[in-house]
Image (cartoon, rainbow over all chains, first blue to last red; front, top):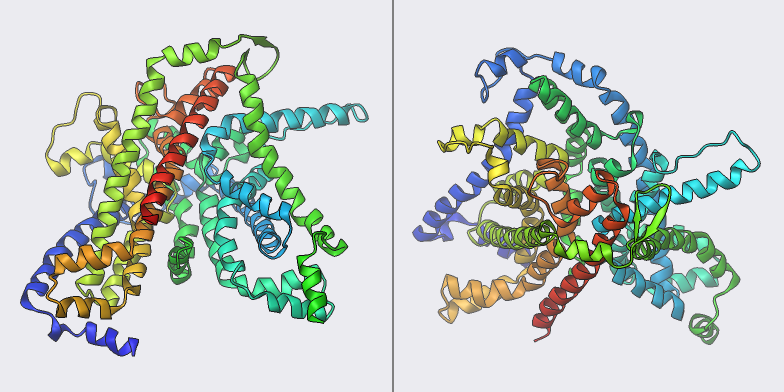
Length: 310
Length: 299
């Protein structure tokens, strides 16, 4: 029934002349906006493939005369993009693993355990969603630094050679990312977990299932689509994250892609080597674009449920 | 049997297995979370009364940091800049996202065309803010904007001259696609029968828009407004840091102001005083705004 209506709705014969005219006028605006997105991206890719001399001689907008791949070599090897891509992959893997494990187990407990302190905990996480985390960056950094110094001092009593820098570490960064998405992620997942019928859990309990079994075999299958969405958005978000990485990572061999690009831009703008800069930016976009093209449907359908309103 | 289950579920004490599960999976993240949010808030309130460079000795100052803070005109500017960007972003994103979503749904764009538009419009949402900001920065710094529009470049460059407008535009540019997709789904969920009934009663397109579509997607619009508010501090900080740099120039926002004092000037005590004041202010503002928006929903 609904389907028949939709098809009827798309029948062009049903549209009046005024509607067709309105459609064309609006199409003008929509494609105009689309151009503000497509054109800068085209420009980025075209410049990445262009010999810098050609760019400087005035071919700013056009397609490259000949494809110039040296830019990518410069960006990949000379400015260590290879190392940075590896770092970013490592951090993202830790962050996604930690956050998915935390989110799915906690949403099970928060929604299906009926105890007072669990309800209080849920409220606590909900309230904490309003905290502007960006303002906490400085105190967080100090906190982690002092924890590192504290651990170092204790271990040094037994082993004087021991040194520990907790802030400048990819593992720390991954864990911070994992914890950072806790409140918002729980808010989203709880909406789903709450809809899982309790009788499934009770039936499993009668059959003698343990907590881990209920979590992995009853709860997780229901959460699969939303977990998929979380994995995708978390991977892309953590790959792109800039401020926290900039704050915590000090030594250059630990830089992630985002921080590396920032540095690359500063370095090559002085040398006016725009080709290398844009090649670096393009390299950092490739994983994101691949994920987006492969999973566009999951990501965009997820956006609809992300509101928690459906 | 069912009585036994009921008793087990409504019992006030968790079973040993439940304790185990909670100890293993709920306690560690809770500790981590408290360590990363609650404790930093407390220590930063404490540190804000000291002169502290981040390492070494702390000198007690009393309320001095707060007095300096409130007499610094840059601080007021930072707060105002944040509010202006928030307002501009809300207006631009809400208006354009609603406009685009209405257009593709109510004007019956074909499925294929809608999908292409969705694909393109969502792209800025997934790209790294570093790439986006640097790309636009070049666009303005190399005066490509001037070449396209035929306007003359100001002496110290577009970004230095119009930072508010440029950052508001780029930040909104990133956000529109995602919200548009949410709205498209919401509008498509509105039953066609409502529109048919309205048409029979002689309601025109505008009447249908304001009496059917907008009220029915109001929850989604509300969600847009709140989520922009919740993310504004971090997003502004990100873009200002990437566009303007270290905040040593005249243009700054709350997050960058704090960050700058902590990591460029090494005045951790002062930076923490900034954090405390801004944290309290943003929490109050966020709470009030959310309260107002939620209230409207209840009426």
